Length: 544
Image: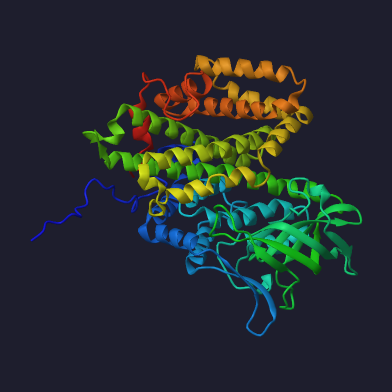
């Protein structure tokens, strides 16, 4: 009998059946650090339960199926009636239901609401990032609606509900509702003041009729949308319900769904308004000001989403190298591979630590913390989202050819990785927003310097980086051309300060050497070999 030629050896077991939250030591430490003792047990129990759910084989498979079966647009029913519906795979609804029940839209009224939600969002992103979009939009709509107390009283309980109701019907009949957003038009992306969608006042106070289009509409299957349109008084924010109070469908014509690089489980569409009923949110001409709080919240979610993607990429890479053998030993024990893994790990931990610090500032709500957020959120959004693609690509390479195959899950992370840098304002928009904060809000820079100054004297490379940053800030001549460089340095110094204060010495030492001290190369795996890289990699290993 011929011997078998298909003996499977040296293959890595799948990374399933683990607690995604507890296995992430950097995340668990950040949550514990910022938690009030009164809610510690409750929050950690909640996040551990979500972590176990996220790491289960069943839920991981839901993520795969949702990604492999993207949404489908149904413009008409079988009789020719226009319905403009989006059909999803059942796994999408299961994921979204779990996300809502985990409190990912319920931050605004809970103790430590933003911190616990931020950690949960970072964990849940690692299952399938696509369903994060409607969860983020719904969460972020609340502060915009609060500019109108009547609207907030009506809609906030629905948006912060922990019940997912997928049916299209009047919101007053639903146990929970989701929100989308429509700002971008064909003729302009970030320049929303150039929008041409018009809003004509109707007889009932505060109601309008919209006519126009949106080139990108996030989550077009949602129950309501915040959109910008030109009212007689200028750019104004409006609430567009998907279904009207009498049960009829509002005019919300989905022209097509975008065929995207990644984020394929989620629907993004082009929509047209033609006599679409809407309610004004805030005053006429104050649309950008009304929407700005929503934008700030979604930008933080971009940081969290990128941190989650990086964490999952690093976890997969370290897991693979822990089991895979080559050239007479485990990959994780090879000095050069260990350098690569450690370099990836400190990038991931720096992103997570910064994101959770910002979430804690949101919970605090004090003047000092609000001022810090004004400069730290756009800087973090700029830098962390920029770092996500190279981390995902390098982590996939750690798996060799296996990382280039869809079954590994790594290509999905790579395709998803550029999204958060584009969403809610690309890199230049964030860098210019940092400049606006520096030039118009001196309290923001003061708050930032107080924050990073708490680590002064603890590491000479961080001290030198702070000094260099102050020198750069002292000369704002021709600053627009240096805006990206400035945003990068602000983010790196803040990350360094946080790691020096809170991370294990080995992690802080590696970060300061490679990111602030100039002792690292242009690619991952170029940290000084004299560092304790084995401890850094072990900290990143996903073991509960």
